[in-house]
Length: 174
Image (tube, rainbow, N blue to C red; front, top):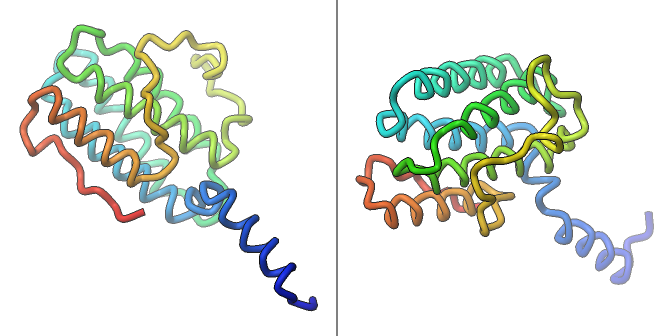
């Protein structure tokens, strides 16, 4: 390929125009999922009860699926585990102290699934596809396509809710 300034410019522009496609593959997606899992785990004490246990079980299923995930595109097991986690998170009452954080977590999972191309994968048995699920929690206003955006939104919401620093996550650079 003859690399001229024009060709280089087109390639660079194409790469910069779709950064989420590159940022959410393989290890980056696994890292983002780990950050979301850690964040949700930090608020389980504020949820409690059977819903808290269901969320804990769903988090464990996501961790198991991610651990079995080799490199490449997102696997069906990870997609199913994330969809179940989304559905369970959406059952947390809107009156909860952590409602905003739950909305951010659900939005982050949607961003992970959407950017990885997994949104087209069939939903697991017993879970309606996300397009058909009526979302109880409001969608976050922030873009959550990158772990950095999630971390900033999560920590800001934790501050606004008056939650302790232990609920906050480390904000990745990207």
